[in-house]
Length: 235
Image 1 (cartoon, rainbow, N blue to C red):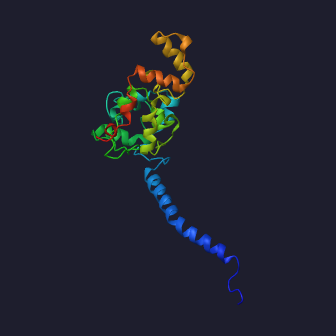
Image 2 (tube, rainbow, N blue to C red):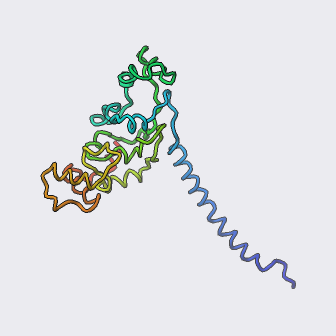
Image 3 (cartoon, rainbow, N blue to C red):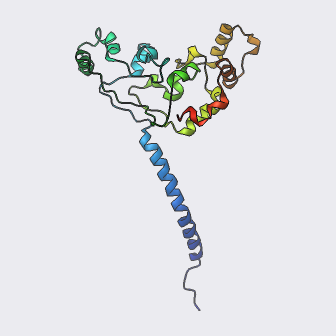
């Protein structure tokens, strides 16, 4: 009996069966990745009622983070600055700029500017800014190089796995408290200064950021075992 199908048909059949089995899994994984990443709006600049450049205010003018976000060391929220904070400078400079008319209007009327939140966590996640600052976690770790942003965007998706990476090994990221706002951080220089401040022997200077962080976890009384407990973030 003559051969009806070409010899390659068997190979094509096997490939088709494997593809049919793998395709649903691949589609599910791709869909999951898209659904998790896209709504996060990572690296997407958020247009605000007033164009605000962190690069200009932080890098060029040297304004400290705490000047605008004054509650970051005391409160669970960093909060956006009230209009009065903006006007402390802009009552003297750029007084006629059309771009700043919403600021002047807010100041005249007492109605706050409706800034759009950039880093918005789900309601079931508890996050406290002051604790992270107190324990030496830098702004840069979560907010990226915000000092270089012309328009603010979210640099991290803030997935649970990303948070747990820090909670399980905070020593990888911890700094002395006075270095939390330093965007040009040098752990070696910071360690030398910290040893001088705390009266330690320079012969015991750490050999890596992680080793320095382990020292800070002890000095700042960080309970690493407790950090991975569910209730820390889900209360």
